[in-house]
Length: 130
Image (cartoon, rainbow, N blue to C red; front, side):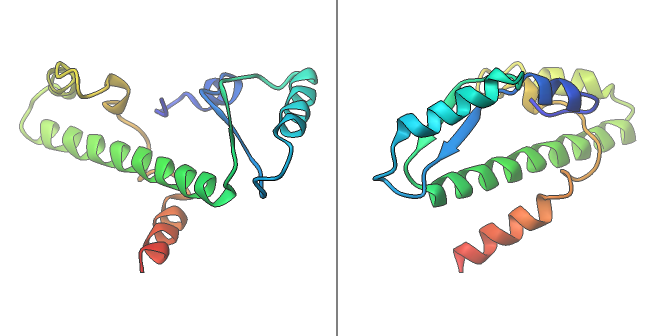
């Protein structure tokens, strides 16, 4: 999914697109039509989800961002631990990835703590939880 050195590929080959309507009475065909017009000017396409609730969409996207950042941070910590004990990081992650419940793209070492929006997204989720 998201990992070091894949920003341009992620941009050019999106895994999903979200279209949110502010009102359940809004016409979903209009949203899809606008989306198709944007695709017509060369913006790549991906599976599209049209959602009736813009707040659900916002919350879901923020949760996704925090989960990605958490995964990157965790794998980076595992990498540091492996290095400390002279274990090949890729071997440690490969062994962890043998469990079918763990997806291999969650086991990729990345840069930083999860990007510039991590704190904002985490603060947003914390605020909503209060």
